[in-house]
Image (cartoon, rainbow, N blue to C red; front, side):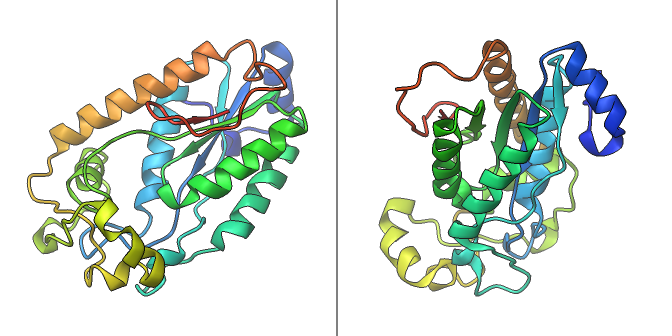
Length: 248
């Protein structure tokens, strides 16, 4: 079964689909930012789309919105091609987007593949749920290195999404906890001249396939387990959880 894409449907078709069964709108969130010399600038958006569409193809009652390709990426601004709208604007866009979406769809699930979106996304979900809107957010937990290293390279190889293997090279391989202060002060360029936090060596399509399968399985379970309602109780703490990282 192929994923139902909102962009491919007509308005009457969407209305009929929602009337026929409770429908969850999956909204892929990516970024437009550098990913070293070997990965495309649209890497996060590509991964978000793949996760959302693969999960939707396995779960009835889901529709995939067009990807939001811009987010909070200011830490990458020193590198050509990065387009960031900042954390404040990202939060506002997500709030207004979900407010609009919930006029049609009873449930909305943001599928986020960019770590820089985490804080504004968490804030947006908290605000929306305070308005009694059935909205959540999910991010994959791939593990591995932080940015444009083996993990993301493997994912993009699996998706056959334009990896320039011939120019792949190691970046700063220090643990993120050891870099975080310099990252906050000067961005990625201050700690890694080539924009990579990790090492793409050893990346493979096979590893990427396994990572994607595990993430899609987790996302599918989140959608299915929430088929009645994402809302639990009005006093539920807003948080971004590890192990599937669901913002409730």
